[in-house]
Image (cartoon, rainbow, N blue to C red; front, side, top):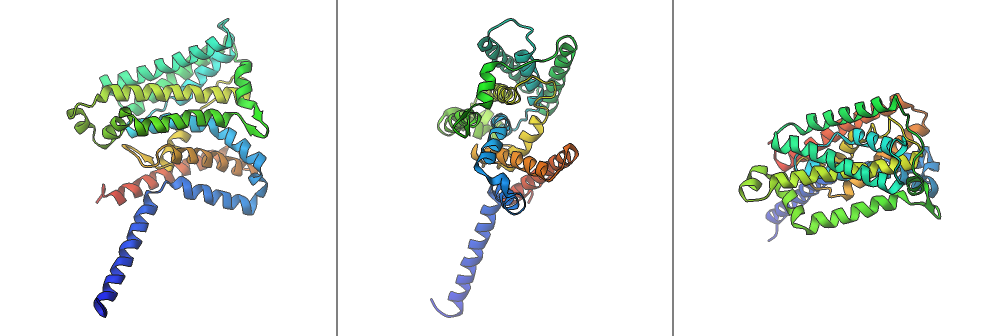
Length: 332
């Protein structure tokens, strides 16, 4: 083929390739480009933040959020949400540091894990059996747990964290903190489990079409039940690192986990019913958000600036979610 026809075919091929590249760019998690942009801004304005020591410190700070993100991403992939992270963190912090129960540290840690399982089970009961909104149920759970902790703290204030958790939260191997290894130890098995197991295929099927999954015999209730228990358990592990990192208990600990985990999951490529970012995208988003807050602190922006930026990030996440869905044809 030669002449005008071959030129037209060439132009069509190039246009198709450009459209394919545009579609691929829209499906990439926003966290990838956002992290590169933040690193570039830091290189220009605050190069000290890019030193290996500070980057590892920021990675340690990101670990609790990264673990919470694992649970939030699971919930979103089955068309649910979990906003109870803050309440779970408060209860865990109080149990571990108030000294109300004269138990060894390892028993307190097991008790906290049991509380996490119980919280996830109660959330799942309301969501699956009573068909209540996951937003309302988990938000109410966070408020109830927070109220319980505040009531008990009036009689006995939180104290120091257990030595084991302080070791995990603050220890280093050389210059490398231990906390990111805990994050990695939870992230990698979850990624492999979701990719290789029947449970992972059930999660994808429920997210794609819950009604079709139900009619095809997939145990929808059991899967969502398990997802919420796993989510609350990840919240407990996140609280362990927070308490260990700070070194003392607090009734304010983990209050931003729900909002930040939601933003990180969406920026990381996971949307309701779709897990395009897997677990790597949300993990990068968790690091991106933590790096951003450190960058804002280096510019002298306090808590008001951080709150405004959090709101802007959630708005950006919503825009990214809409753009990806429009590209998939949902709104056409």
